[in-house]
Image 1: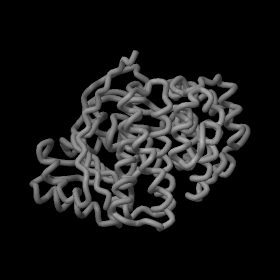
Image 2: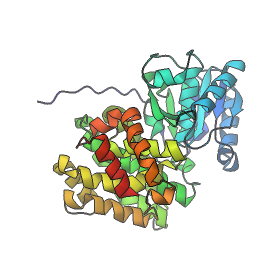
Image 3: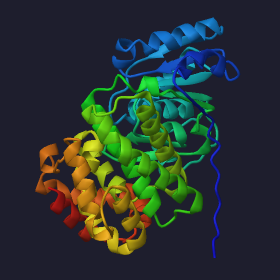
Amino acid sequence: MINFNYYLPVNIAFGCGKVKQVGELTKPYGKKALIVTGRASAKKSGLYDKVKDSLSAAGIEHILFDEVAQNPLTTTAEKGAETAIENKCDIIIAIGGGSIMDCAKAIAFLAVNEGDINDYIFNRKQSENALPLVLIPTTCGTGSEGNGFAVLTNPENGDKKSLRCNAIIAKVSIVDPECMMTMPKKVLASVGFDALCHCMEAYTSKISQPFSDALSLYAIELIAQNLVNIYTGADNSKEAWEKITIASTIGGMVINTAGVTLAHGMEHPASGLKDIVHGHGLAALTPAIIEASYTGDTEKFSKISKLLGGTGAEDCAKQVVNILQKLELNLTLSDLGIKEEDIAWMAENCMKVSAASVNNNPVVFSQEQIAEIYRKAL
């Protein structure tokens, strides 16, 4: 019997040139914005100026917080929240990739909730309150604009885990494919593979359901048909960018419903420990994890394999490797600085911060088995 719930109140404003409407789209939610960015790219691309001008035209003041780095820290979110409170900001706007959007979500949450954010991340405390959010993604990968997750790293102990609540779902996510087109190739490869992993993991998750399955398969096909072509320059059309951008947003939506599985679960300890680029960690781990997991759901892994150009579940990992080679992402954990002596801590940390991902995987592995998968990926 089919029995499931589906709830995802995401407001997506999609289209080329849509970012020019940020002022009018933001106006219903606040009068003074904290704009959250990274240190340079939004300014260099000119996107920050576009957003600033549109907000001014709509009568919205703003303060800039430009201190977010990859794998955002809980301490950075705390500093951003202090800035928002001190300047009496009533809305948070993010311009950037997943790290920036996730940090902005945490800032919006901390600006109205007292205490240690780690208590909320580990569900020792709960709240459904946050400042309103407007998200403007500039990378087609994390899909953070389509969910209520904010992945953060605690610098004190290396725990990398997500704050999850409906309050940090954006009031509006402005998804403009033209904002993606200034990405360096190496960034496109990394974030594009992250989007593919989101869709594959949500599809094969034990808590998947018909709506998330349908969206996942559609997005996997879009990525399979367009990511490598955009990366190699074979197709740089707006249509191809639109398709890969849609797939990325869908990836964020489906993991909100169906969760992620072991690739994300095992990657978070690695990047929490070594500050690895998230997509690189996934590239190093995903083939070994699929090879170990496909017997848990041969029907679904077979469908993925065929969408990627393969013949069945048994060669799904091989098809993923083929894509990674074309994206110049054929990496090992050793390439990323992980050593044998790191594996015990990562396996233990995986069970701590990624218990849901471990249990969502088509095959549920023990801590010792997870350690062995890490070794195969070295």
